[in-house]
Image 1: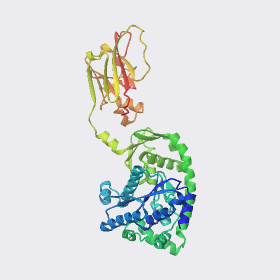
Image 2 (image 1 turned 30 degrees about the horizontal axis):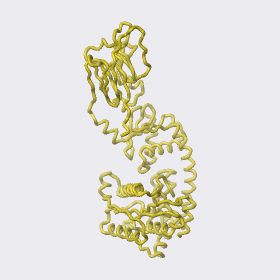
Image 3 (image 1 turned 180 degrees about the horizontal axis):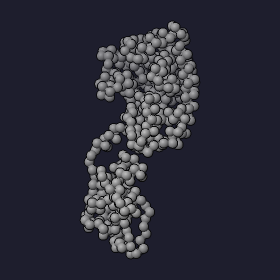
Image 4 (image 1 turned 90 degrees about the horizontal axis):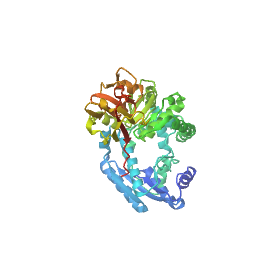
Length: 472
């Protein structure tokens, strides 16, 4: 079996000379077998080993004994050992997810933490052929599509590898017996309290007895064929993603033209977008992807809520992916930022407002001797039409202005809609007000009421500059 695993590692290019490998060690047969085989291969493969164990605090003294067993095993093999205790039951309640899901999230989080802190570059997980078959059937019943029928991947991003995915559970148990390893047995794996256990103890044995004695290998062969087709489609999606998706600091945009793609490509593009935004594949199902497609057909500003704290919003046909926590926190923040300056204080003054440096300068109109800038953040106004003060603030409900070239006032809301400015960005646009009348929607529109004419004797020049971010 050691040779079988070595050949599998080489065939799938899982390890390279000099790799430092952190093994996820529960103390059960699978992870003990994995650790022991890698220990026997470490000189041939020229790798270093470490092991990480998590006590989920779900099984009382048995969990403590699992931890002690794992520690002793590593000491006997002279392998560096890392462990932690996490109350998974508490975390699952706090997050509103199953203990299985909470345990998985915490395990990978701990493995990644140790990997970064201790300089490991690979994380070895002990999934086997039976786990793979169980996953395929579980995903089939969830209706997860081709991606789910690919089952467990041999390796994935982040340096995660599965070196014993070539071994069956029977082979693993035989290896532990021959090498007198006496691994720990988690009794909850013998109870049909989880969906996976029911597949393991009821469905697969029934299929093996009544349909195919080699069902585990058959499912494995099928998933490999599906992986080939699925990988090809995913490569095609890479090009469409670069064309139709834009990643920004606070959101990810799927452009409306993407929704004319063939459904096989579109569903993958959406899945890739959701992962690239949240960095999580978990909890996203086909029904969520179809919800995004349906959202693209709806009117602007409609939004839906997806797992992994994702908000999807239709903004003039484009789909914006946003962080739910950040969006709701921002929307619940009612504090309004406003700056007021007396007219007499405007001369050669500079102030700060919401990430801008704003400069004011009064210029005498010397009849055509002024060079007016085309920069949308620099505008000129009739200084003498200002009575008392200037304000810079956020927009408010009911705001109106008379846009340049028009006679009647128009609601700012309608102006923003016509300009196709997303609703969540409107509050960030500075509004310049002279006395009680809006003079400038910064970067977009100026008012007819304060335009410079041949009769203007003094001009107020206002310049907005974005402050440079500190590197500190």
